[in-house]
Each structure stands twice: as C-alpha cells, then as structure tokens.
Length: 147
Image (cartoon, one colour):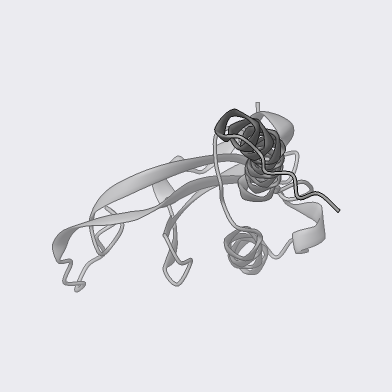
C-alpha cells in the first residue's frame, strides 16, 4: 500500500473548498437573523391605533389601554366605543406635562411621553402621558367636536 502525500497546492485547494461553503452558510444565517430581527422590532399596534397613525408612533398597547380607560372614565363612554385617532411622541417641559394646575408644583425637566387624541365619532379629546403611562392628563382647552 502506497501513502499519497498531498502537495501544498492541493492542501490549499482542499482548505479553500471547505472554508468557502462555511462562509456562505454564515452569510445566509446572518441575513436570516437580521431579517427576523427587523420583523420582530417593527411596531405592531393593530387594533389600537388607526393605520395612518401607526406608522408615526410606537405607542405600546398598555399605554393605549390606559389612555382609553381614562377617556372612558372622563366621558362615561365605554372604552370599546372610543378610538385612538392620533398619537404623537412628545417631550414635555415639566413633570406636569405642560399642564400646570393650581396648587401643583411642577418641576421643570424634560419628560418624554405621548400626545394622544381619542374620539368617539362625535367628540375628540387630547391626552398627554409620560413615557410609561403612569401620568395621564386631559388637555381641557382642546375639547373639540370631531370634524
């Protein structure tokens, strides 16, 4: 039996033929991971916000629900009859969300949050929230009929 020794060029060719498929598989795996990550990170607020608003915001379903509950209590309209019709991210100038009340001490500081319009088909109300939804306030000066 004769032992066959590979030359340097044959070894190099063998190594290249093994490395090349690995690189291709790694590139495909990386592309799939990026694709799934992009789908996972995209906002999905269907049912809570109308289609035109959905592209402009990433309001969580939990905060949307909190705002609808506040609106329902204020208007005495069931939350199922209310819709979030416009949502805009906003940074308020103080911890009162820019809606200082008498006897309230507002601390000047930037507060990230949302400006959310709620409507029932006849009327429209504008609410302000902080980023977590723990503070929700109605803009009383913006009570308006729905156009």
